[in-house]
Amino acid sequence: DWSVSRKLGMASGSYYVLHEPLLPHMAIALGALVPVWLSLNAPLAAGLLFAATVLILFIPIALTGYYLVEAPSMAAGRKVTRWLNLDRAKIQFQPT
Image (cartoon, rainbow, N blue to C red; front, side, top):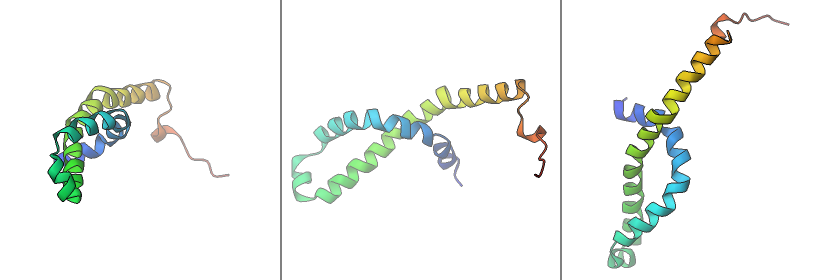
């Protein structure tokens, strides 16, 4: 229940939208930084190091996407919903 994990949960939409176009570029850049001897002698360690580094690098990118795109869009959607009087709390359930 850490605040960081809650924020990452909120930003998960940005993560999934951004990882597809950014991952190939990050893979090329990080692949160039991994020593060849590590890849040859300990491929599992190199792969785990690569995956952990990519996840860590995505954290600020996903949070930026959340705060600049997702949060304002959700707030605008709530305003439009209220403006059109489509609030769920006000809709009465009518059993059939």
